[in-house]
Image 1 (tube, rainbow, N blue to C red):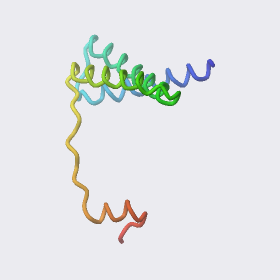
Image 2: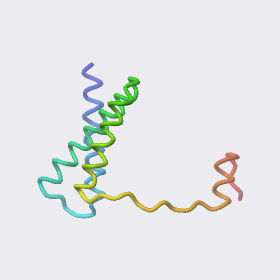
Image 3: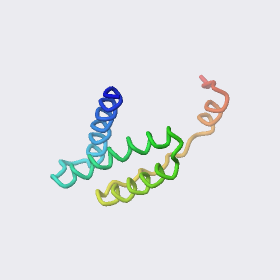
Amino acid sequence: MWQIREEDEQRRQREASAILADLGREANAAERIIASEIAALVVRADRERARGKHSEAEMCSRLIIRALGKLGVKPGKAKQASTADIIARVTGKRKE
């Protein structure tokens, strides 16, 4: 059990660091707290989903999205894939 808690804590710290990096600037104290809480929710959502508790995972996801908005972190625009990339993904072969 302690291994799971340790793995979750390490993942929470990695997620929080990634969220703060997305800010593109030094975070203030409130932003660091929000990032830490978002990261904890990400870990929890994955655990709940793995246990088959999808409604709990969905609630975590909603809280994550709301909190990311408070931080001002917005998803990047999707990059359109080229036809060659799509063919390579479907076939598993890359054209040289």
